[in-house]
Image (cartoon, rainbow, N blue to C red; front, top):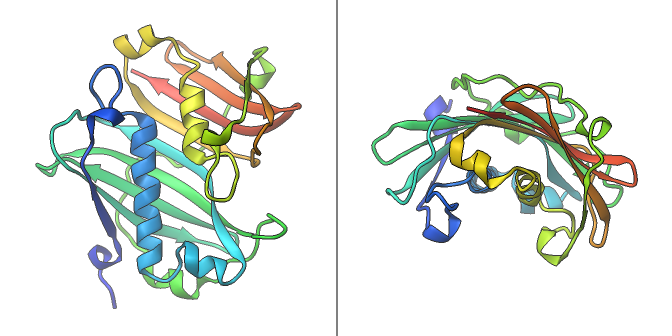
Length: 245
């Protein structure tokens, strides 16, 4: 039987200057990119990755992601990202993350929910839990699970944006990381200078396609918490919640 350490995947990244923001620090979108890459590598190494799923005419889609950041590193050395599966059910699997700097200091945690969908119908399909269940892990992830997000589109007129080539992923759909980038672009640069994002949570509800005319919405819920959403012709593609500190 595998130990929790053996069930945990780890990938190492060296943040380059072109991935830093104007403060010389790593961004939420870059962190999220590292998380998704680590998840992809872990799944591929254990028989339930992209190529394994496509053989069954299915693929993984990210449904929810909650990221909590303790510290934003600059160009100070490699970052190690750890990932493990902590829950499996008929339609979804839950995956957690922790990332550390080169001294072993924990920089943050994240939780994510993934669904398997049919490649042709793009509808959810039942998960084959046989392989994945061997990697179910009891490692702790001390942050809240993704929760309900305020519908920002009900409070804000929105900013228009049209989906372009650079927004697309390998499936020709709106890239998961691009959702995050466009949402965070709704904030003024002054806020990034004065505060840090402590928690970013996003829910993916529908897929975007090339050329779609979108509306991006931002609504201030409390002094340090905002709700965001991306819509197309009144249909919500994604919602997010951002907590600043």
